[in-house]
Image (tube, rainbow, N blue to C red; front, side, top):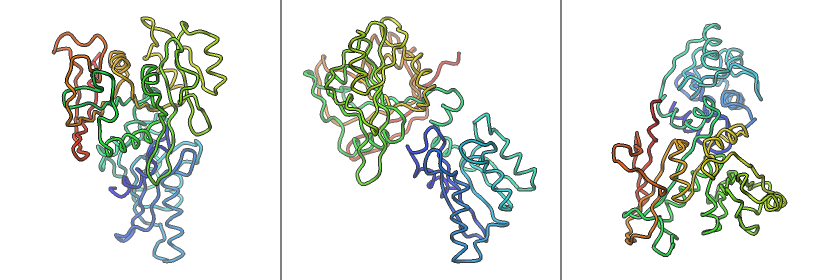
Length: 370
């Protein structure tokens, strides 16, 4: 199962909004076939594992899959989607036992794949490395159950809590390894979101740049309530590899909206809340568009608005051992702020990772019980 999980991670960013799935076929204590779901719309992990075993069988007759055990990170599908049901393929290939990491939360599957296997006399074991597999597929689990994007708020700050100096200088707070990992995060998600303040201050490209490997660019989502974005902004240089959505409100100038569209960007005019984009409503719109995940790389104002709106699922913070000082330097989360300690936003299941001298802390936002 460790090998199956390892294989599944090779497809990070390429299968959204599908899950990451790996499969390994074992016979006589030997791996005779393995595969993973490589890209959206492509063959599933089980099918690729059978194909790999068949290829190996040409070299070694002992690689016949009949009577073998399959280890798969996610319950085999039981319905026709872009590909035929994998549960049927397992039955057809006469696998004797299937070890499953986690049951598929997709209502179209949810135990039906296991039922097909057992009804055909195949032994099934579930829950192996379930915790690790669920974390790998946290984006899929949130999206398939709610149709809303899994939102990760990423920040970088000094050890005294600043995201910029008193004059706004912020390049660079985190080190090169930390910044490289941020591009791995961008690869993981469908969309990357910033506020208009970040665009005006930094004019970022918001693309994925990974050394020596194929990368996919997330859809760039700019929160711009009054369509103030300059037409020469880098994020408006749109092509088939880097798409942009400008999210605005009824307060935006209609002529400016048309000019933005002429640049190739899509414009979403949402309902406003307190004269700003209603972020909670926006998550429903983006989810309906098939955007299953968002990396929030905004400034302090957008970060606070996102936290208050309850759209943030996970927080990843890089802390660099630098000190800026001063009272005017911004912090990662601005806005009105929390008045009482008892009302603070809490993070659960926190983990700490080091990137040389930088420290990365990640955790999940505690959601209100109601």
